Length: 385
Ligand code: SF4
Image (cartoon, rainbow, N blue to C red):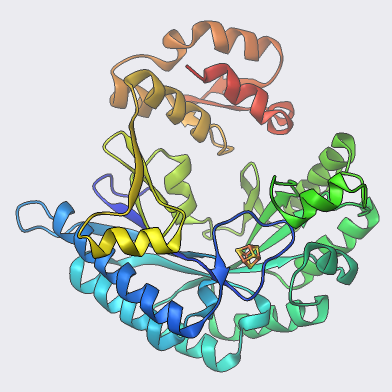
């Protein structure tokens, strides 16, 4: 599971959707084939610029993971996807065991597409299911119903031997029994990986307007926590390892790309709104398709902002990102990276969190306790510089 330290993960943002889900604040615009084709030519330009910038002494940068996220990357035809992947394999060195993931929605999946995706080099799918309850799916503004979700997951299983499903809980008016039924249906379908999200009502979304208009009430925190614990109990009892606060996997199927983020490892994001982290610097692109293309037209990278993290900020990030993993942060790795002992540097914070029963130290690692899993944000705040 550990990745070579000299490698990068690559994230590609495909900012198109067939209509907007009511809860979503990711950057995307309405799907139009002509605009998508134009966009892909710019995405290739950006990839080429980074391949030149990052090549050291004639050596190509090695990619360990590739992740097509969105938006709805499943709107790409297999041919369009294969063209992008061909360019990546010409310009970067692609590990033969690279994890190559594609986010897909049930409504845009067909057997023909799945077969062609597999042939083009995709070896993992992340399927945006969200719920197996039709009322909840329509509340969220999804374009599929529960029957279609089940059918498309079964279809995906005919072509892919590694796929994940996303589920959302704490949906207004969702009862514990509804959530239990969604979990049961998920488990019956035996996905290799499950990601859970507690519904957040984000500012500027149609859901936020409905909430302000008093059309529904938010789920209270205690039910939210109960739902989380129920999912944890269900999934663990069904053979899934709980390896990150919100993620569960069968043995050998953890998300290698997402582990990069939690392990404080470098990654490059291309496309509007995507984020990168390299050499202690975080930088991100303009979340605006026209501006993104304009910058590339002018021969510039479409970067909106760059922040060089101080040593103190890097230490804090390594700790609070790593604590999201149930295995926690390796004290030895931390020392190797910063030449300082984690337990000495954060002695005061650790003592406080230990006395509150939120973290534990053992086997050369610092990690969250069961109680800490529910109160992760409180723990992470303690480490902020
Ligand atoms: S498909 Fe995904 S990215 Fe697009 S609107 Fe829905 S949740 Fe957002």
